[in-house]
Image (cartoon, rainbow, N blue to C red):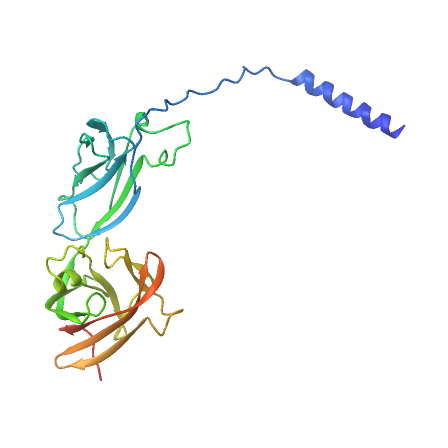
Length: 283
C-alpha cells in the first residue's frame, strides 16, 4: 500500500504542474554569421603602457583574416578625458593582414594615468560562430607618461652576445621622479649601435638600502630576439645575483642572471655597469 500512496502523491503533483503550466512561444535559433565574413581583431587586447614625456603617438596593431582588397573598418573610440586624438577607422592596404592605428597622445599630462578603449563593430567579428578571435574586438589601454630625471651615467658591459665582453661609454641612467626606480637607457643599442638584432629596451631596476632590487620575473630586455632576461634569485640564487665593487669614481654592478628562451631558463648570462653619479656606495 505504501507504493500506491507514493504514486498517488506523484500523480497529484503532476496534475498541479499541468494546471499551472504557462504557454511559451516556440524556440527559434538566432541568426547565423556568414562563413565568409572577414574577421578583424586586436592580437593584443590590453596594454598597460608607461611612456616617456617625448612620446607623441602610440600605435595599436589590428589584424584581419583575409588580405584581399583594401578594407576600412570604422571603430568607436572611448576617451573619458578627451586627451587622445584617434582616426575614425582602421585601414588595411590591399594584400596586408596587419594595420596600425596611431593615436596622438600629446595632450597627456605627466604622471597622470589615462584610459582608452577602441571597439571594432560586430560586422567584423563572429557573434554566433565560435572563432578564436571572436572575443578580440575590444582594445583597452591604460597609459601613463612618466617623468624621468638624469641620475648619472654608466659604462655598460655586455657578456652575453659577443665572444668577448663588449662595452659602451656614457650610457644614460635616469630616475623615475618621486620613486626609487631607475633605468639604463637602451644599453644594448649603445653597445651594438646599428645592429638590427636589438630593438630599443631599457634595463629597469630599483635601489633600496644601497642595493639593486629587481622583482622576480621574466623581462623582455632583448625584444624580438626570442631571448628573455630571467630573474629568479629564490630558486636560482647561484645564477641570479649582484656583485658590487668600487671602480675609481664609480660603483661597478655585475648582474649575474639567466637567459630564457621564451619562458624557460636556458643559459647563464652576465652584464655589468660602472655607475657614475648614482646613489650606490661601496665601503
